[in-house]
Image 1 (spheres, rainbow, N blue to C red):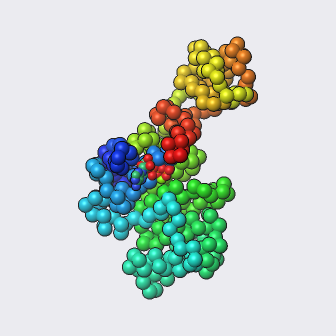
Image 2: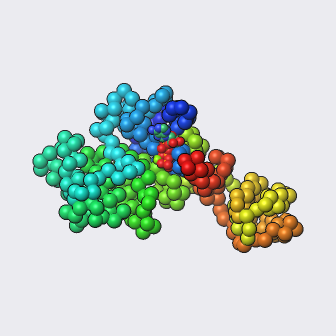
Image 3: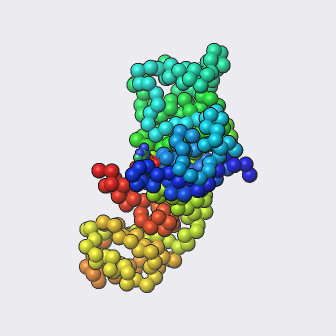
Length: 324
Ligand SMILES: Nc1ncnc2c1ncn2[C@@H]1O[C@H](COP(=O)(O)OP(=O)(O)OP(=O)(O)O)[C@@H](O)[C@H]1O
Ligand SMILES: [Mg+2]
């Protein structure tokens, strides 16, 4: 197994007291899509920037294609493509002009540059729009141009920081398809950060779930879900819980790992179908009204809840509250 990325115990603190990376270790096999899934502020962009040699860690080690990112940043930059979280293109230039400029920046010129620009335009499906100003592009097209720029130096590893955030559902699915093609047809290693569970679930062969600067779980999506045996019971309450639902669920002996957030009660149990009558009876005894009940196999959200100790949506809203 050839490793494209290896990180050992990376730490980084932003003054005065934000521990953005709190001992991150992970490894990524060459030629695979590796997804880093985590809520706002988890440290995804910081990890990405360290691995791309755009910022240095306080301690720890990282190698990309076997090259130490701290000791040889210039060599690392030659084998990687980077697509940052924000748009990198000039809105008042055409798609092709942006690519030419970016190529020249990398020292590519003449016929070789023209060939590569045509090649990447085709790979992201922008041949027909290449002569249009970027400000006339849709969000999905602008993001595909960002990816084309990242591909221009024929990288072995492509870093994508939240490539689909802000795209409409249709453009997101198109982008998933494009990313998959890159990995399969060009045997590229793709590092992809996201805060969409479904994205990580459908694209990644391996993923790391991160929270507060730590990797809380790593494995294939299926492996991580399989580790949680049993079912998830999800009860949508008619009203926000005043404590009675939490009390009621605690009394049901077949349930473990129950949590109530607002109107959502989530519980884990060995057999969801068998547990439902007892759950409903316990809620009814406390006069808690129920809007709906579903039983499902474990999802990545359950994996996150188990390892991070809180639900993904809750982590997102907590970090928004901190940022506000
Ligand atoms: N340049 C900086 N100076 C100070 N603090 C920073 C800086 N960059 C990031 N942080 C903080 O470090 C933590 C991790 O940030 P990071 O951008 O890596 O998270 P993220 O997972 O990419 O989040 P998002 O999903 O919002 O992009 C956050 O608390 C953030 O506020
Ligand atoms: Mg980020």
